[in-house]
Length: 399
Ligand code: HEC
Ligand SMILES: [Cu+2]
Image (tube, rainbow, N blue to C red):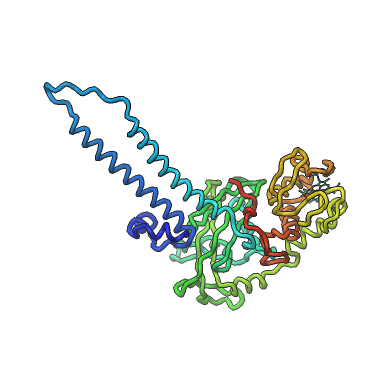
């Protein structure tokens, strides 16, 4: 489906506007296709309007001795026509636009969830096992002239984020300072990364082809080898201060084997889930069980108990009669501002952990709570059933 809209477009326009054919990813094919569809539509309207204008200017031009005709002021048929045609065209654009947007915002369950942290001026990606890539590479080489000679030195080093090919990835992003924007041009997607709130989007990594190779620097042997892979740029698309233009990274698509090997190499002592569990044992356990038992506060697992409570990914019934999806943002708010949304049937007995738990602690608790749910986005990685509906939303992003 994604490909059809794009393949209906003539390559020459795609090449002119985007400089590359075919599109570098399914998501790009969709965005480019839509963009070109709107471009063609605009060209069509422009030509018709200009042609009509020129025609009328000539046909009804003022001639000596010929009195001006009175202008008609109402014509129902024409008015219906010029209302219905543009509205219908806009509707088509809207539907295709919304379709593509949903595809980017709602990722399938069991998508691999990567956490992205933006700060002045770098990106950090954390994998489900809690590790983050120690590997870096320069985006360009700089020629540096010194007094004695001209030497080629490496520019600034940027992190390399490894992702497996042909896999659904979803990002859960937050900033530690100002507003940034995580932008992967080859997916035609960027999303604001803001402090105090998770945002996110998803994408499917393309399959690698025989032409896709990257130079891989082996830190142990200090040798460069060529492996199957594809590098994509990551930029910050929100002007965020001095080094905004150097806030970049490489997204490296590799085979599942290479990815798995990296994850094994970089495993950390305490995974986010275990770190979250530790905090639970120390602070939260007195009021929150994880086995369906009702204590002072609701249980965290996704077992329907007598109060009709569910865990991550399910709606929470609130005391004021409304309901809200339990996503990462909801959990964050429940920890920092527990009385903002009080779960139905419970007293507002929890005090805020603002200032006591760091962003990372909260991230880890959320990972732990997620792991208890049968709607865990990382179900492929950790325990949890995969028989879930596909309506859980990526990191609760709503921007
Ligand atoms: C003094 C008891 C108490 C402690 C300790 C406590 N909570 Fe709570 N918590 C509650 C109560 C009561 C509610 C339900 C009312 C509400 O929503 O505020 C709740 C609700 C929540 C919710 C919303 C749950 C849902 O099902 O929607 C989350 C998330 C949460 N707490 C996280 C935590 C975390 C994390 C800790 C430990 C760092 C913690 N709580 C410690 C009493 C507590
Ligand atoms: Cu930035």
